[in-house]
Image (cartoon, rainbow, N blue to C red):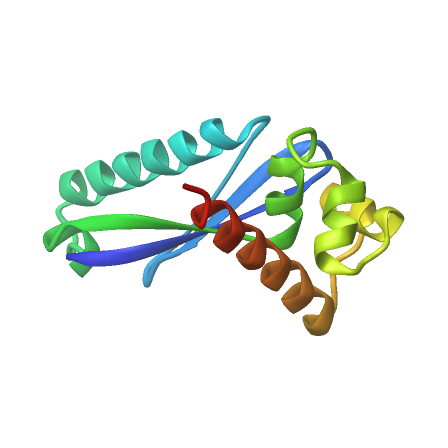
Length: 134
């Protein structure tokens, strides 16, 4: 079974996903998060059917089967939780000011590696706190 990675980002009021395959790159967009995941699955299914019907050499991911792992870029993560967690709350858990978080959420700016790590660590701490509730 092949593991395919779909990288999801957010910009210009749309989620976008890229799946880099050995023989092609699949790019899709959608207005919402669940929609982008379904668009990736539909595009992979379409590509798989095309490979099988073409009579050409069939890639391993088609022959062996595949599963999709979705990985969110910071823009998609922040956009997804916008409205669920306030920017004020996100600022407290990440130590990054609200305005800068807004730029990252909209996709207008990409965080540097250190900022990205602060955001990820903040979400991980929040997850640990939630999981400790009895």
